[in-house]
Image 1 (cartoon, rainbow, N blue to C red):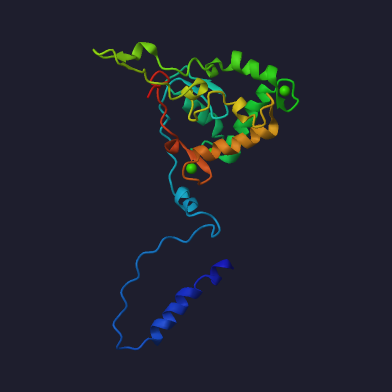
Image 2: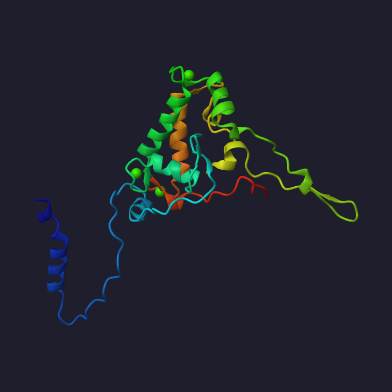
Length: 231
Ligand SMILES: [Ca+2]
Ligand SMILES: [Ca+2]
Ligand SMILES: [Ca+2]
C-alpha cells in the first residue's frame, strides 16, 4: 500500500531526536513550511492557483461582449454578455475555464465561421464575420473626438483624448480590433485551423493571469463601457 511508504521521514527524525545528547536545549520549533509542490517540475503558481476558490459571482459588464476568439455575445437579460460567454464556455460549470474548455468553445466558433468546411476562414468568410456576425469589429476611428479638443485663451489647442481600444477591443478582454484576422499570422487573408488553434492557446495564456491552467471569473480584467474608451 502506498500509505506504508510515507512515515519514513518522521521515523528518522524521531530516531535522531532520541540519539541527541540529553543536555542539549530543546530545538526551537521549526518554522511553518509551505505544502510540498504538487508537481515538482512545475511552477509554484500551479499550487497557489489550485487552492484559489473559483468565484461564482456573475461577471459584471455591458450587455454586448466579444469573446476572446471573436464571438459576439449580446445579452438580453440582466447578465452581462461576458457572463453568458463564461457560462457557455465553462462546460462543467465549476467556475474554472480550462484550456480544454476554452479550446472547445473557440473551435466551435471556428466551425461556425468556416461555412464551406475547408478548414480555413477565407476572405469571404472573414467578410461575413466582419459585416454580418460582428460589425462591432469595424474600427470607427483611431483619432480622438474633435469635440473634446480644448483651446485656451491664447489659442493653444489641446488635442482630444485618443481611443485606447478600437473595434472589437471595445467589447472584449483583449485589445484586438479584429480578433479573427489577428490570428492570421502569415497575412494571407485566411485563417487556418492551425492558426486559430495557436491563437486559442496564446489568448488563453493572456487571460490565465496566474498561470494555473484555468481562467476564473475573478482573474479576468474588468470590462469598461465601450463609450468610456479614451485616455
Ligand atoms: Ca470548467
Ligand atoms: Ca472556409
Ligand atoms: Ca488562472
